[in-house]
Image 1 (cartoon, one colour):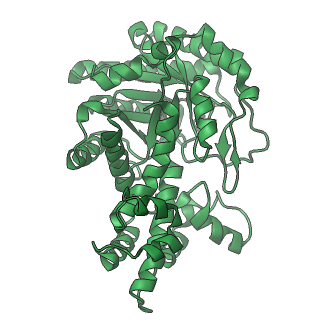
Image 2 (image 1 turned 180 degrees about the vertical axis):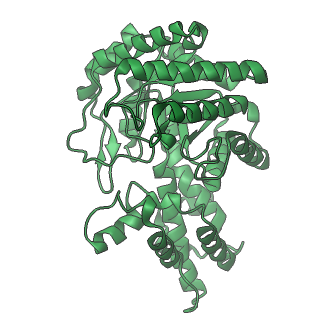
Image 3 (image 1 turned 60 degrees about the horizontal axis):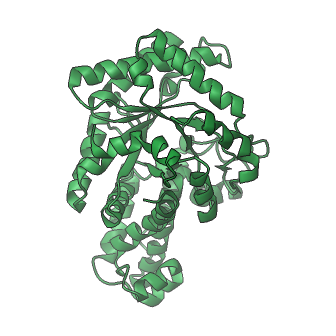
Length: 428
């Protein structure tokens, strides 16, 4: 086990010893987000945990077109480019289970999930979130907890066998599923409930029994986290902030389960104070994804406005106009998430906290539009007054010399500003 994975495996013990132990889980496949995370790790001399979801990356390619082995090569190539040591890199798989194939009967969906987790384990991913909570085509609408645990144990056994075959590191596991499905919540946020303490403990107990039934007790000893709902979430325009007083019962249950910490999903857009409180209370693994690509989109749009001033050209399509055209042509990734009138949907397509626009950046059309923008700006310094006007959050950093007034640096810097908040909260 690498030093970085060992530190993750010991995260609960470090917390029990009174250490402020936490880690940020970067959930994105965008090249600039990956680069920013790795540069941030270099600057902070910290481990970097990067996770891919079952929909993004799987044995069939996912929506990124990458298998787990491809994704590992993609991340490690960027690590080499920025000088980040790969022995401090932890690769994780998020929501590993039948979700991409839930339209199939359970046997077929689980066969695909098995092939996927085999690919993740064989490729050397060392953090696995097992999520088998979704009902498949021939399942009842809500699965029994025992069924969820049994399916999770089935997948863990396949991962263990794959590692034995490939000769890699034994992974650590995260169990529990009290979060929205991959891609984000569809429901309103006015009925968000914190996980009941007994439910969290029951999740651990039934998974322990399920792992034991398939003879992988040693794998269960590597369960480091339990996914719970601490009472945080975000929608298109709203953010539900962490309220520690509402989670006191849930936090207290960790005293009865000192071998694990909680993993908190959907922590995007929380305040620095809220993220600090989450880590203090034992939500030590903080997932962030849409906030990073939201920050990237802010910077890209700001640069587009700067380009319009520096090199006005009525024949050139601005980046926001290009993205609007691209999203309207392929509405599947936003339409069911953005209700309302056409004018309301237009605003959400570009500016929603849910950041469904992130699914379009990998498309050839969006990559072409982004390259055209960066070509216009080139590698020359951008005028500080224009940066102040359109990317004013960087004015102080540029004045102090912490960020260069270059297009690429401003993009990386926008993502880094978010990563800094998480690093301060987790103690990285």
